Length: 285
Image 1: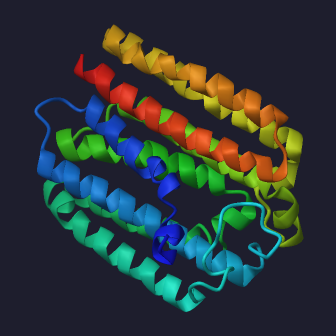
Image 2: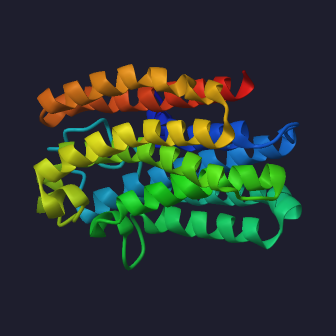
């Protein structure tokens, strides 16, 4: 596999794609497909840029070492320099900004604000004077930018409105992304503590991290029930079938430690994809 593809972390891209799917599924028809393309492309580019910054700066800050339990990080492995990976991140952010131009022409200053804050936050997640991930703010970042803002922004581009249904859908999408983050932080808890990366798992311990995973794995299904009720649309309950995967994931997490949690991360990504696809199908029925 190309080191650039490895650095992009394809398995994490559900966290960028699924919120756009949910926002588009909730939006009134007909969809503006060109705008949806630029929305999706911008979201994916910001996610990849975030991953590049994380890869380079986690290595510089000492959070990624030879004792890392997770998948390969190209900077720590010496496959690419931190400077090259950071340049890749800047290219991704520039391309994302260009994707935002037609969205801004459509939606005006709210879309400009979303685009600027999303790119700044993507860098600030690991970089800058107060890196969010190192101060226990990763979950807040994910809920906002891979949840409420991603879903609501997608809806706004299509309909120039931001209803409560988009917020609820955003909480569902953000929760699924937090599950991925929380499993990652649970696995890396010992190394993060040594590197002074004060994630929620480091701050409050393993028990908290495991409870967090349970809460956010189940919260999307509460959101789906609320959306089906508000819209009086029973087909929106279709994602409930994904609760089987959520239950299997929680069972596996409860029995996993250290490197074993890598398999749980793959399941969490699968849960995200299945939930998003079923949500989109439910909206079409």
